[in-house]
Length: 299
Image (cartoon, rainbow, N blue to C red):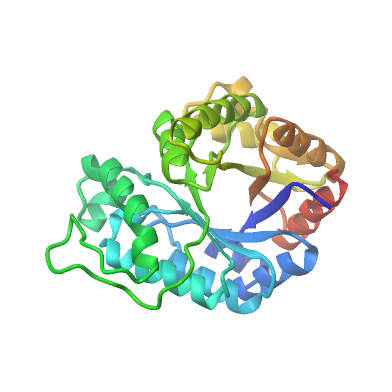
């Protein structure tokens, strides 16, 4: 049995148009290829066209039978909490319990301003969401500290999905240790995964909790031909996230599937058990097939 699961980020609008693929087709293709999950981000004011995560993942859930349906990552704190709980419960229901709830507090000040939520409140509101969502999804009447009115009990009641807390920051590791079933950093090196996993285990023990699983978000352009090079992708990571170029160069999955499997094995050896990969270039279907081949080589 493969002890390392690989999911893929569903294609955005531009890629759907370029490659002539719908979300439904993409989700079904990933499942048929043998990947373990399909994932979608959550962006309100991203500067370009993006789909609503809950609607996009509902389409993916309807098109598939087996694979995980995941948020990468949902930002519940920019929503009224009862509304976030309703969206999460609906996805859990329509997917037949296949949801993994990646949660974050990012998106930049513009996203929070667009939602009418003070950026300075993002940490506190995220902690509140993580604390109260289990009660809300269970259908228990729950007072909401940021909304006036009587306690609410959204329906339908559903099993609480696994929660993976996104980001590699110390605050995110603390949240994952306290609330999460997983820690979900993106675009970091195996060395950083190992260090974060050790800190996660230490903090979880302090809370008397089982150590959360580790999942990593990555990026890939596999095979040859007209796909971005490792240097191209690394330069983009270094520029966008202020990473040292030598660290950014250690992140992308490039080359043949065997090379990708070797890199993924380094993350597994560092403590990760899941990877969620965004396609950085090339035909989306072909890239999914190559990722699935890498998965089959990973032992």
